[in-house]
Structures are given as structure tokens and as C-alpha cells.
Length: 105
Image (cartoon, rainbow, N blue to C red; front, side):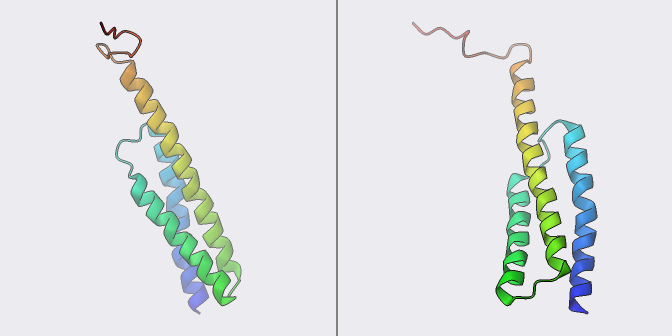
């Protein structure tokens, strides 16, 4: 029974993460996204996977952990892509000082 409940929890999270990743991808900005939060979620999934492996309780729940971990890690990739887009957009703003334009001396 505990495996069914654990899987239910993971499936609920599992459905929300792809929506989060898609929303972040479409937003094209990292504003409002917390990298420490995402990394904490990843640590939690890694702990759950480690618990399954250490106890030898390897069953279908492990698949749910691995799928969720993969999706959240995709979110990290999207985060860094969006950070790069934010940086590029910031440098394109009128009045932004570019390092090549600054002359010293």
C-alpha cells in the first residue's frame, strides 16, 4: 500500500513538473525561477532514489523517481538557457554599456 501512495505522490509531482518546464521555456526568462529551489527538489529525488537502492526496495516507484528527476533536471537546463536570454536582452537595452565601448586612459 505504501508503494501505491508513494507513487501517487510522485505522479502528482510528475504531472506538475512538465507544465513548469514548458511554462519556463515559453516565458524565455529566468525571472521568478529559483535555482536553489530546483536544486533542493533534485536533492530530494536523489535521496528517494538512494533510499530505494539502499533498502533493496527496487520496484516501479523507482521509475517514477527517475522520470521526475529527468524532468526537473530539464528544468535546470531551461533555467540556464533563460538566464542567458536574460543576459542577452539586458545587453541589448538602449544605453547599456558594452565592455568594448569602455575605454580607459
